[in-house]
Length: 219
Ligand code: AP5
Image (cartoon, rainbow, N blue to C red; front, top):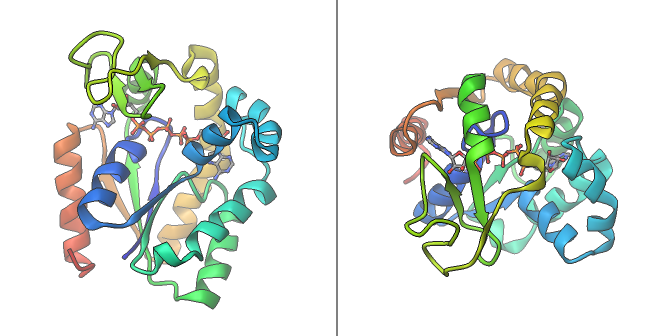
């Protein structure tokens, strides 16, 4: 099964991709996670990407597309993958199609997680991440058992530098200008299914599984 999760910042792409990838045994490819890890390790990619990621701008296409194509084409994706955070503009969507057309086929599904702006701002501003294992929490929606610490490894929780009020605004603007057209791109090719992602995480997951079932993607 090949799946793309599309949606604005805070729609729940990472949260759902993590559960789905475990449940369906699919590789989860998150461009945001790859970039943050590269920044943390100060790799050449991280050095070039840092200022874009921290200000909420898109990292240049050539940097991101190459990483994704390498991951999608690697051996551990032969049973499929879940792409989270890519494509983010029409150019990236065309590059992905061009690669998949040659390597596999274009029979992949795009789930568009849509949520209203108040939900997105509330989710992003309350998100906290474990510095050690990267588990994601929310101060209100999914609070850790012990304030400030990870439930799984007791690591310290932190706030992403791009989850500040100013940068959230910019990310939402960048999404509307550059990523929203990708929704139309996929809608035209009839590969897109929209899910209302304002709901509780378990309900959204169930709706996604129903969609995959309906589309005969083996579960
Ligand atoms: P990336 O990490 O991809 O950020 P994003 O798309 O802005 O998405 P988020 O991770 O913020 O949100 P999400 O939808 O995954 O929400 P989550 O599940 O965490 O990208 C970061 C940056 O990297 C970009 O700004 C850009 O600079 C660069 N980049 C990445 N990809 C790129 C590309 N292809 N091209 C160029 N640049 C690229 O949930 C959010 C919070 O809500 C959490 O706290 C969670 O616990 C909570 N929550 C989730 N679901 C629910 C629910 N149903 N109910 C209640 N709470 C919920």
